[in-house]
Image 1 (cartoon, rainbow over the protein chains, first blue to last red):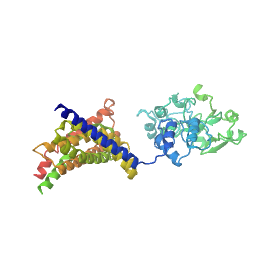
Image 2: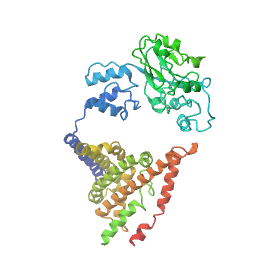
Image 3: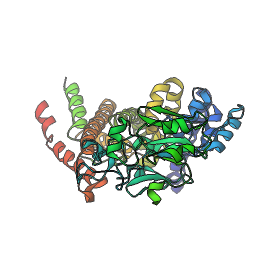
Image 4: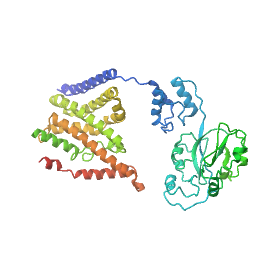
Length: 273
Length: 205
Protein backbone atom coordinates (compact mmCIF):
# COMPACT_ATOMS: atom_id res chain seq x y z
CA UNK A 1 0.00 0.00 0.00
CA UNK A 2 3.00 2.30 0.04
CA UNK A 3 2.21 3.38 -3.49
CA UNK A 4 -1.19 4.64 -2.37
CA UNK A 5 0.26 6.42 0.64
CA UNK A 6 2.90 8.20 -1.38
CA UNK A 7 1.50 8.63 -4.86
CA UNK A 8 -1.96 9.88 -3.93
CA UNK A 9 -0.78 12.74 -1.65
CA UNK A 10 1.76 13.73 -4.31
CA UNK A 11 -1.03 13.56 -6.85
CA UNK A 12 -3.30 15.70 -4.73
CA UNK A 13 -0.73 18.42 -4.16
CA UNK A 14 0.44 18.39 -7.76
CA UNK A 15 -3.16 18.37 -8.97
CA UNK A 16 -4.14 21.33 -6.79
CA UNK A 17 -1.00 23.12 -7.88
CA UNK A 18 -1.73 22.48 -11.55
CA UNK A 19 -5.35 23.54 -11.29
CA UNK A 20 -4.45 26.73 -9.40
CA UNK A 21 -1.63 27.47 -11.81
CA UNK A 22 -3.93 27.04 -14.79
CA UNK A 23 -6.63 29.19 -13.23
CA UNK A 24 -4.10 31.90 -12.50
CA UNK A 25 -2.62 31.73 -15.97
CA UNK A 26 -6.04 31.96 -17.60
CA UNK A 27 -7.10 34.72 -15.23
CA UNK A 28 -3.96 36.67 -16.01
CA UNK A 29 -4.85 36.58 -19.70
CA UNK A 30 -8.57 37.30 -19.26
CA UNK A 31 -8.15 40.04 -16.68
CA UNK A 32 -5.08 41.55 -18.23
CA UNK A 33 -4.86 45.25 -17.53
CA UNK A 34 -2.78 47.18 -20.02
CA UNK A 35 -0.07 48.99 -18.11
CA UNK A 36 2.07 51.68 -19.60
CA UNK A 37 5.41 49.92 -19.98
CA UNK A 38 7.25 53.21 -19.97
CA UNK A 39 6.41 53.68 -16.28
CA UNK A 40 8.79 50.87 -15.36
CA UNK A 41 11.48 52.30 -17.60
CA UNK A 42 11.12 55.76 -16.11
CA UNK A 43 11.32 54.29 -12.59
CA UNK A 44 14.57 52.60 -13.65
CA UNK A 45 15.97 55.93 -14.78
CA UNK A 46 14.94 57.90 -11.70
CA UNK A 47 17.40 57.92 -8.78
CA UNK A 48 15.06 55.98 -6.50
CA UNK A 49 15.70 58.27 -3.56
CA UNK A 50 11.93 58.78 -3.06
CA UNK A 51 12.75 62.21 -1.69
CA UNK A 52 9.54 63.84 -2.86
CA UNK A 53 11.28 66.90 -4.26
CA UNK A 54 9.17 66.60 -7.40
CA UNK A 55 5.99 66.93 -5.35
CA UNK A 56 4.77 63.39 -6.10
CA UNK A 57 4.61 60.39 -3.80
CA UNK A 58 8.04 58.98 -4.47
CA UNK A 59 9.75 58.05 -7.70
CA UNK A 60 7.01 55.69 -8.89
CA UNK A 61 4.38 58.38 -8.39
CA UNK A 62 6.41 60.81 -10.45
CA UNK A 63 7.03 58.18 -13.14
CA UNK A 64 3.29 57.47 -13.40
CA UNK A 65 2.51 61.17 -13.63
CA UNK A 66 5.20 61.63 -16.28
CA UNK A 67 3.81 58.85 -18.45
CA UNK A 68 0.26 60.12 -18.05
CA UNK A 69 1.50 63.49 -19.18
CA UNK A 70 0.31 65.28 -16.04
CA UNK A 71 3.83 66.06 -14.82
CA UNK A 72 6.60 68.03 -16.39
CA UNK A 73 9.99 66.58 -17.03
CA UNK A 74 12.75 68.18 -15.00
CA UNK A 75 11.14 68.15 -11.56
CA UNK A 76 13.59 65.54 -10.28
CA UNK A 77 16.10 67.64 -8.40
CA UNK A 78 18.52 64.89 -7.25
CA UNK A 79 18.66 63.39 -10.74
CA UNK A 80 19.72 66.58 -12.41
CA UNK A 81 20.33 67.05 -16.10
CA UNK A 82 21.38 63.45 -16.74
CA UNK A 83 18.07 62.01 -15.52
CA UNK A 84 16.10 64.63 -17.42
CA UNK A 85 17.89 63.58 -20.58
CA UNK A 86 17.19 59.89 -19.98
CA UNK A 87 13.53 60.49 -19.15
CA UNK A 88 13.04 62.45 -22.35
CA UNK A 89 14.64 59.55 -24.24
CA UNK A 90 12.14 57.12 -22.69
CA UNK A 91 9.15 59.38 -23.22
CA UNK A 92 10.26 60.31 -26.70
CA UNK A 93 10.08 64.03 -26.08
CA UNK A 94 12.61 66.59 -27.25
CA UNK A 95 15.70 67.45 -25.31
CA UNK A 96 15.06 69.58 -22.25
CA UNK A 97 17.65 71.93 -20.92
CA UNK A 98 17.78 72.14 -17.19
CA UNK A 99 19.77 74.62 -15.19
CA UNK A 100 21.51 72.84 -12.32
CA UNK A 101 20.55 74.28 -8.98
CA UNK A 102 21.96 74.15 -5.52
CA UNK A 103 20.62 74.94 -2.07
CA UNK A 104 21.92 78.02 -0.31
CA UNK A 105 21.44 79.25 3.24
CA UNK A 106 20.51 82.91 3.08
CA UNK A 107 22.04 83.93 6.39
CA UNK A 108 25.49 84.84 7.57
CA UNK A 109 24.61 85.82 11.09
CA UNK A 110 27.24 84.08 13.19
CA UNK A 111 27.40 84.75 16.96
CA UNK A 112 30.06 87.42 16.26
CA UNK A 113 27.50 89.40 14.27
CA UNK A 114 24.24 88.87 16.05
CA UNK A 115 23.12 89.40 19.61
CA UNK A 116 21.06 87.11 21.76
CA UNK A 117 17.83 88.05 23.45
CA UNK A 118 17.83 85.03 25.77
CA UNK A 119 19.68 81.89 26.75
CA UNK A 120 17.92 79.00 25.06
CA UNK A 121 18.21 75.71 26.97
CA UNK A 122 15.33 73.80 25.40
CA UNK A 123 15.28 70.92 22.94
CA UNK A 124 18.28 71.35 20.64
CA UNK A 125 16.38 71.57 17.38
CA UNK A 126 15.58 74.52 15.13
CA UNK A 127 11.86 73.79 14.98
CA UNK A 128 11.60 73.74 18.78
CA UNK A 129 13.72 76.87 19.16
CA UNK A 130 11.69 78.68 16.50
CA UNK A 131 8.54 78.10 18.53
CA UNK A 132 10.17 79.73 21.55
CA UNK A 133 9.49 83.33 20.52
CA UNK A 134 11.39 82.84 17.31
CA UNK A 135 14.67 81.54 18.68
CA UNK A 136 17.43 82.94 20.84
CA UNK A 137 18.79 85.51 18.39
CA UNK A 138 17.49 89.03 18.27
CA UNK A 139 17.13 88.61 14.50
CA UNK A 140 13.79 86.95 13.83
CA UNK A 141 14.91 85.78 10.39
CA UNK A 142 18.33 84.31 11.04
CA UNK A 143 19.72 80.79 11.14
CA UNK A 144 19.10 79.11 14.48
CA UNK A 145 22.10 76.84 14.09
CA UNK A 146 20.74 73.62 15.61
CA UNK A 147 21.12 71.79 12.34
CA UNK A 148 17.66 70.43 11.53
CA UNK A 149 18.78 70.78 7.92
CA UNK A 150 21.97 68.81 8.64
CA UNK A 151 19.89 65.95 10.04
CA UNK A 152 17.67 65.63 6.97
CA UNK A 153 20.45 65.92 4.41
CA UNK A 154 21.08 62.51 2.88
CA UNK A 155 24.17 63.67 1.03
CA UNK A 156 26.19 65.16 3.90
CA UNK A 157 26.15 68.44 1.99
CA UNK A 158 25.11 70.86 4.71
CA UNK A 159 26.94 71.56 7.94
CA UNK A 160 26.81 73.98 10.83
CA UNK A 161 29.88 76.21 10.61
CA UNK A 162 30.19 78.72 13.42
CA UNK A 163 26.48 78.35 14.34
CA UNK A 164 25.25 78.97 10.79
CA UNK A 165 24.33 76.29 8.26
CA UNK A 166 26.50 76.23 5.15
CA UNK A 167 25.86 74.16 2.01
CA UNK A 168 28.72 72.49 0.19
CA UNK A 169 27.65 73.02 -3.43
CA UNK A 170 29.70 70.12 -4.81
CA UNK A 171 27.79 67.64 -2.62
CA UNK A 172 24.34 69.24 -2.84
CA UNK A 173 21.86 67.55 -5.18
CA UNK A 174 19.13 70.17 -4.71
CA UNK A 175 16.76 67.55 -3.30
CA UNK A 176 15.02 70.32 -1.30
CA UNK A 177 14.85 68.30 1.93
CA UNK A 178 16.63 71.03 3.93
CA UNK A 179 14.42 73.69 2.35
CA UNK A 180 11.33 71.95 3.68
CA UNK A 181 12.91 71.47 7.10
CA UNK A 182 14.13 75.02 7.81
CA UNK A 183 11.59 76.72 10.11
CA UNK A 184 12.92 80.12 9.06
CA UNK A 185 12.68 79.37 5.30
CA UNK A 186 16.27 80.52 4.95
CA UNK A 187 17.33 77.91 2.45
CA UNK A 188 16.43 78.42 -1.19
CA UNK A 189 17.56 76.92 -4.45
CA UNK A 190 19.86 79.14 -6.48
CA UNK A 191 21.22 78.60 -9.97
CA UNK A 192 24.59 76.89 -9.91
CA UNK A 193 26.78 79.52 -11.53
CA UNK A 194 29.18 82.25 -10.59
CA UNK A 195 26.98 84.99 -9.23
CA UNK A 196 26.47 87.39 -6.38
CA UNK A 197 23.98 86.41 -3.67
CA UNK A 198 22.51 88.28 -0.76
CA UNK A 199 23.13 86.18 2.32
CA UNK A 200 20.44 87.73 4.44
CA UNK A 201 16.72 87.19 4.78
CA UNK A 202 15.90 89.98 7.24
CA UNK A 203 12.69 91.61 6.08
CA UNK A 204 12.49 94.28 8.75
CA UNK A 205 13.06 97.95 7.98
CA UNK A 206 16.68 99.00 7.67
CA UNK A 207 17.05 100.51 11.13
CA UNK A 208 15.72 97.39 12.85
CA UNK A 209 17.75 95.05 10.69
CA UNK A 210 20.85 97.09 11.36
CA UNK A 211 20.36 96.79 15.11
CA UNK A 212 20.04 93.00 15.29
CA UNK A 213 22.91 91.90 13.06
CA UNK A 214 26.16 93.30 11.72
CA UNK A 215 25.78 91.53 8.37
CA UNK A 216 22.10 92.12 7.69
CA UNK A 217 20.64 93.63 4.56
CA UNK A 218 19.24 97.04 5.41
CA UNK A 219 17.83 97.74 1.95
CA UNK A 220 20.08 100.77 1.51
CA UNK A 221 19.84 100.56 -2.31
CA UNK A 222 23.61 100.93 -2.78
CA UNK A 223 23.87 97.61 -4.57
CA UNK A 224 20.85 98.43 -6.73
CA UNK A 225 22.57 101.61 -7.91
CA UNK A 226 25.95 99.92 -8.31
CA UNK A 227 24.61 97.16 -10.51
CA UNK A 228 25.12 97.89 -14.18
CA UNK A 229 22.91 95.06 -15.31
CA UNK A 230 19.72 95.96 -13.46
CA UNK A 231 19.90 92.61 -11.68
CA UNK A 232 19.18 93.74 -8.12
CA UNK A 233 15.81 94.72 -6.69
CA UNK A 234 14.62 95.47 -3.19
CA UNK A 235 11.83 93.16 -2.14
CA UNK A 236 10.39 93.11 1.39
CA UNK A 237 13.18 95.34 2.72
CA UNK A 238 15.98 93.17 1.42
CA UNK A 239 17.99 93.01 -1.77
CA UNK A 240 17.21 90.22 -4.19
CA UNK A 241 19.51 89.40 -7.09
CA UNK A 242 18.17 88.01 -10.34
CA UNK A 243 20.58 85.20 -11.28
CA UNK A 244 19.75 85.46 -14.97
CA UNK A 245 21.02 89.02 -15.16
CA UNK A 246 23.88 88.75 -12.69
CA UNK A 247 27.33 88.55 -14.28
CA UNK A 248 29.23 88.17 -11.02
CA UNK A 249 31.10 91.42 -11.65
CA UNK A 250 31.37 92.03 -7.93
CA UNK A 251 30.30 95.69 -8.00
CA UNK A 252 27.54 95.10 -5.44
CA UNK A 253 29.86 93.11 -3.18
CA UNK A 254 32.27 96.03 -3.13
CA UNK A 255 29.69 98.67 -2.22
CA UNK A 256 27.65 96.72 0.35
CA UNK A 257 28.19 98.52 3.66
CA UNK A 258 27.03 95.52 5.67
CA UNK A 259 29.07 92.85 3.86
CA UNK A 260 26.01 90.69 3.31
CA UNK A 261 26.46 90.16 -0.43
CA UNK A 262 28.96 87.48 -1.38
CA UNK A 263 30.11 86.05 -4.63
CA UNK A 264 28.87 82.54 -4.93
CA UNK A 265 31.58 79.85 -4.76
CA UNK A 266 33.78 82.13 -2.70
CA UNK A 267 33.51 81.25 0.99
CA UNK A 268 31.30 83.60 2.94
CA UNK A 269 33.61 86.14 4.48
CA UNK A 270 32.11 86.12 7.94
CA UNK A 271 32.82 82.43 8.31
CA UNK A 272 36.38 82.38 7.09
CA UNK A 273 37.24 85.60 8.91
CA UNK B 1 -32.87 30.31 16.91
CA UNK B 2 -30.25 28.23 18.68
CA UNK B 3 -28.27 28.10 15.47
CA UNK B 4 -28.50 31.90 15.13
CA UNK B 5 -27.42 32.37 18.74
CA UNK B 6 -24.48 30.06 18.14
CA UNK B 7 -23.40 32.08 15.11
CA UNK B 8 -23.58 35.34 17.03
CA UNK B 9 -21.52 33.93 19.86
CA UNK B 10 -18.90 32.66 17.36
CA UNK B 11 -18.84 36.07 15.69
CA UNK B 12 -18.42 37.96 18.96
CA UNK B 13 -15.83 35.51 20.23
CA UNK B 14 -13.78 36.14 17.08
CA UNK B 15 -13.82 39.88 17.77
CA UNK B 16 -13.41 40.01 21.54
CA UNK B 17 -12.39 36.91 23.46
CA UNK B 18 -10.45 35.11 20.77
CA UNK B 19 -9.06 38.10 18.98
CA UNK B 20 -6.40 36.93 16.57
CA UNK B 21 -3.94 39.69 17.24
CA UNK B 22 -4.43 40.23 20.93
CA UNK B 23 -5.17 36.82 22.40
CA UNK B 24 -3.93 34.32 19.80
CA UNK B 25 -0.93 36.44 18.79
CA UNK B 26 -1.21 35.58 15.12
CA UNK B 27 -0.45 38.12 12.42
CA UNK B 28 1.72 40.18 14.73
CA UNK B 29 4.09 41.19 11.92
CA UNK B 30 1.42 43.15 10.12
CA UNK B 31 0.00 44.33 13.45
CA UNK B 32 3.29 46.05 14.27
CA UNK B 33 4.19 46.87 10.68
CA UNK B 34 1.23 48.76 9.28
CA UNK B 35 -0.56 50.05 12.38
CA UNK B 36 1.31 53.36 12.30
CA UNK B 37 -1.45 55.21 10.52
CA UNK B 38 -5.19 54.78 10.64
CA UNK B 39 -5.74 54.55 6.89
CA UNK B 40 -3.07 51.92 6.30
CA UNK B 41 -4.34 49.80 9.17
CA UNK B 42 -7.90 49.99 7.82
CA UNK B 43 -6.65 49.06 4.35
CA UNK B 44 -4.71 46.10 5.65
CA UNK B 45 -7.65 44.92 7.76
CA UNK B 46 -10.04 45.16 4.83
CA UNK B 47 -7.70 42.99 2.78
CA UNK B 48 -7.37 40.52 5.66
CA UNK B 49 -11.15 40.24 6.09
CA UNK B 50 -11.60 39.63 2.38
CA UNK B 51 -8.88 36.99 2.14
CA UNK B 52 -9.94 35.30 5.39
CA UNK B 53 -13.48 34.85 4.10
CA UNK B 54 -12.54 33.65 0.64
CA UNK B 55 -9.77 31.31 1.76
CA UNK B 56 -11.98 29.74 4.43
CA UNK B 57 -14.74 29.28 1.87
CA UNK B 58 -12.31 27.41 -0.38
CA UNK B 59 -10.16 25.48 2.09
CA UNK B 60 -12.98 24.16 4.26
CA UNK B 61 -14.67 22.13 1.48
CA UNK B 62 -11.32 20.94 0.15
CA UNK B 63 -10.35 19.61 3.57
CA UNK B 64 -13.75 18.16 4.35
CA UNK B 65 -14.50 16.54 1.00
CA UNK B 66 -11.05 15.71 -0.43
CA UNK B 67 -8.34 15.48 2.18
CA UNK B 68 -10.21 13.96 5.10
CA UNK B 69 -12.17 11.22 3.27
CA UNK B 70 -8.94 10.07 1.63
CA UNK B 71 -7.12 10.13 4.96
CA UNK B 72 -4.51 12.74 4.05
CA UNK B 73 -5.31 15.30 6.73
CA UNK B 74 -1.58 15.78 7.33
CA UNK B 75 -1.39 17.63 4.00
CA UNK B 76 -3.52 20.38 5.51
CA UNK B 77 -0.80 23.01 5.97
CA UNK B 78 0.89 22.45 2.60
CA UNK B 79 -2.32 22.47 0.60
CA UNK B 80 -3.74 25.44 2.47
CA UNK B 81 -0.65 27.53 1.89
CA UNK B 82 -0.72 26.84 -1.86
CA UNK B 83 -4.41 27.65 -2.04
CA UNK B 84 -4.13 30.86 -0.04
CA UNK B 85 -1.20 32.09 -2.12
CA UNK B 86 -3.01 31.37 -5.38
CA UNK B 87 -6.22 32.93 -4.11
CA UNK B 88 -4.48 36.13 -3.12
CA UNK B 89 -2.97 36.32 -6.59
CA UNK B 90 -6.37 35.76 -8.16
CA UNK B 91 -8.03 38.38 -5.97
CA UNK B 92 -5.30 40.81 -6.90
CA UNK B 93 -5.90 40.22 -10.60
CA UNK B 94 -9.65 40.59 -10.23
CA UNK B 95 -9.39 43.75 -8.15
CA UNK B 96 -6.99 45.34 -10.59
CA UNK B 97 -9.36 44.67 -13.44
CA UNK B 98 -12.71 45.49 -11.88
CA UNK B 99 -12.06 47.68 -8.86
CA UNK B 100 -8.96 49.80 -9.50
CA UNK B 101 -9.64 52.22 -6.61
CA UNK B 102 -9.87 49.34 -4.14
CA UNK B 103 -6.79 47.77 -5.73
CA UNK B 104 -4.85 50.99 -5.28
CA UNK B 105 -5.89 51.39 -1.68
CA UNK B 106 -5.16 47.75 -0.78
CA UNK B 107 -2.09 47.88 -2.99
CA UNK B 108 0.90 46.41 -1.23
CA UNK B 109 -1.13 44.78 1.52
CA UNK B 110 -2.54 42.01 -0.64
CA UNK B 111 0.82 40.34 -1.39
CA UNK B 112 1.77 40.82 2.26
CA UNK B 113 -1.24 38.78 3.28
CA UNK B 114 -0.06 35.74 1.32
CA UNK B 115 2.38 34.98 4.09
CA UNK B 116 0.25 36.23 6.95
CA UNK B 117 -0.11 33.65 9.69
CA UNK B 118 -3.53 34.99 10.66
CA UNK B 119 -4.97 33.70 7.38
CA UNK B 120 -3.46 30.24 7.69
CA UNK B 121 -4.47 30.40 11.35
CA UNK B 122 -8.17 30.94 10.68
CA UNK B 123 -8.33 28.22 8.02
CA UNK B 124 -6.76 25.57 10.26
CA UNK B 125 -8.63 26.79 13.32
CA UNK B 126 -12.05 26.33 11.76
CA UNK B 127 -10.99 22.84 10.68
CA UNK B 128 -9.96 22.07 14.27
CA UNK B 129 -13.29 23.38 15.54
CA UNK B 130 -15.15 21.37 12.92
CA UNK B 131 -13.47 18.15 13.99
CA UNK B 132 -13.86 18.93 17.69
CA UNK B 133 -17.08 17.26 18.94
CA UNK B 134 -17.47 20.04 21.53
CA UNK B 135 -17.81 22.85 18.98
CA UNK B 136 -18.66 20.84 15.85
CA UNK B 137 -18.60 23.69 13.30
CA UNK B 138 -20.39 23.44 9.99
CA UNK B 139 -19.67 25.56 6.92
CA UNK B 140 -21.84 28.44 8.19
CA UNK B 141 -20.11 28.48 11.56
CA UNK B 142 -16.70 28.38 9.88
CA UNK B 143 -17.52 31.35 7.67
CA UNK B 144 -18.92 33.29 10.65
CA UNK B 145 -15.80 32.53 12.60
CA UNK B 146 -13.65 33.76 9.72
CA UNK B 147 -15.66 36.96 9.38
CA UNK B 148 -15.63 37.57 13.15
CA UNK B 149 -11.87 37.05 13.28
CA UNK B 150 -11.42 39.46 10.40
CA UNK B 151 -13.50 42.10 12.16
CA UNK B 152 -11.50 41.41 15.32
CA UNK B 153 -8.33 42.04 13.31
CA UNK B 154 -9.79 45.35 12.14
CA UNK B 155 -10.82 46.38 15.66
CA UNK B 156 -7.39 45.60 17.09
CA UNK B 157 -5.60 47.37 14.23
CA UNK B 158 -7.73 50.50 14.51
CA UNK B 159 -7.41 50.64 18.29
CA UNK B 160 -3.67 50.15 18.12
CA UNK B 161 -3.16 52.72 15.39
CA UNK B 162 -4.90 55.20 17.70
CA UNK B 163 -2.54 54.24 20.51
CA UNK B 164 0.47 54.62 18.23
CA UNK B 165 -0.62 58.00 16.98
CA UNK B 166 -0.88 59.16 20.58
CA UNK B 167 2.58 57.80 21.28
CA UNK B 168 4.05 59.88 18.45
CA UNK B 169 3.81 62.99 20.58
CA UNK B 170 5.06 61.37 23.78
CA UNK B 171 8.49 61.93 25.22
CA UNK B 172 9.67 58.32 25.33
CA UNK B 173 12.96 57.40 27.04
CA UNK B 174 15.57 56.68 24.42
CA UNK B 175 16.05 52.98 25.26
CA UNK B 176 12.33 52.37 24.72
CA UNK B 177 11.91 54.28 21.48
CA UNK B 178 10.67 52.45 18.43
CA UNK B 179 9.79 48.78 18.69
CA UNK B 180 10.16 48.30 22.50
CA UNK B 181 7.49 50.84 23.42
CA UNK B 182 5.28 49.52 20.61
CA UNK B 183 5.49 45.99 22.01
CA UNK B 184 4.75 47.23 25.51
CA UNK B 185 1.71 49.15 24.26
CA UNK B 186 0.56 46.06 22.34
CA UNK B 187 0.88 43.91 25.44
CA UNK B 188 -1.16 46.40 27.48
CA UNK B 189 -3.85 46.35 24.81
CA UNK B 190 -3.77 42.54 24.87
CA UNK B 191 -4.17 42.57 28.64
CA UNK B 192 -7.17 44.86 28.33
CA UNK B 193 -8.71 42.47 25.79
CA UNK B 194 -8.18 39.69 28.31
CA UNK B 195 -10.91 41.40 30.31
CA UNK B 196 -13.44 40.25 27.71
CA UNK B 197 -12.95 36.62 28.77
CA UNK B 198 -16.31 35.09 29.61
CA UNK B 199 -18.19 38.10 28.26
CA UNK B 200 -19.65 36.32 25.25
CA UNK B 201 -20.78 33.27 27.21
CA UNK B 202 -22.26 35.50 29.88
CA UNK B 203 -24.06 37.61 27.31
CA UNK B 204 -25.69 34.76 25.42
CA UNK B 205 -26.06 32.55 28.45
